[in-house]
Length: 336
Ligand code: UDP
Ligand code: MN
Image 1: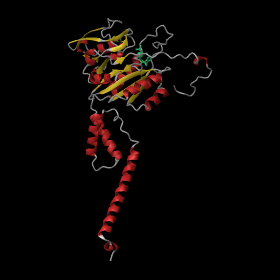
Image 2 (image 1 turned 90 degrees about the horizontal axis):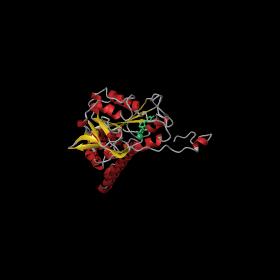
Image 3 (image 1 turned 180 degrees about the vertical axis):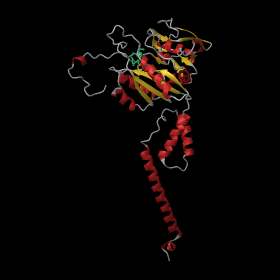
Image 4 (image 1 turned 30 degrees about the vertical axis):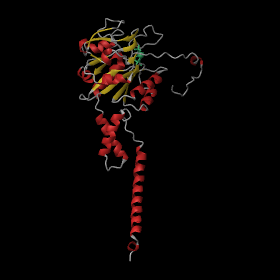
């Protein structure tokens, strides 16, 4: 007689139960183990979704992944779904930047703003002969989708504080290089918007959602610019009919770089539209916009231009009087 047939039905039940439990625990361990490794694989833009979107996506993922215990696969499906869901128009944000004591601090602050924005691609253009280690390393650890470019401003045009011409245009060639990159690399069917974000301004998160759905060129007020608390388009019946600007008010588009965004298709359809080193200071915005649109076609945003969602803040040049006295810099082998 075999050993099994000698067992009582209770013993047999216990044996089967234990075997099933052992198999189940082993499977749990395998799954748990996979999940543990999967922790290294974090989908890139999940955090930037709102809670409602996340809940909806989780439900979908678990629906798709029924009977699929491998976590890496599951997370990959999750990421794919997030990307498909992220069909909001993409913001292509062009930022010129140049080496100075506050550069890393400015870029850090700006990057933390962008981390909170969905579907944004950051095009950082260094005003430099070569890409610097500071910006290269900064971007690689930024957790942002980015493109890193560089082009130097010709020395004759470059300003320094000591130079009497120090108010010469800044970031002109860098913004143009950003535009060329977009024209070369972005698929013509992509839905999006182009925004020129200087590295020292302050941006409200709502600004990005306002500009995202721009059909032509959208405009809005900018705080702390042009010698005023706010410079803004004057809007009547949903149309821009004038400007409250005082500084160089004869400009065709008397607004700041931070005060408008351009539909991606408009940029792609006008390959000639660009900034220029040979226009007077303050005329960069007009130079680009004249190539693209008429004033009466502008789209006012930010509640018909009644809200300030961006500030033209400028960072004070740090006091480094003590530093210049040192024979060895205080930051020797140290990036600041
Ligand atoms: N910038 C640059 N090269 C320069 C000076 C400025 O690339 O020599 C960049 C700067 O980092 C910023 C933009 O151009 O993103 C506008 O410069 P800034 O903020 O100094 O000008 P503002 O409009 O405040 O006068
Ligand atoms: Mn600035």
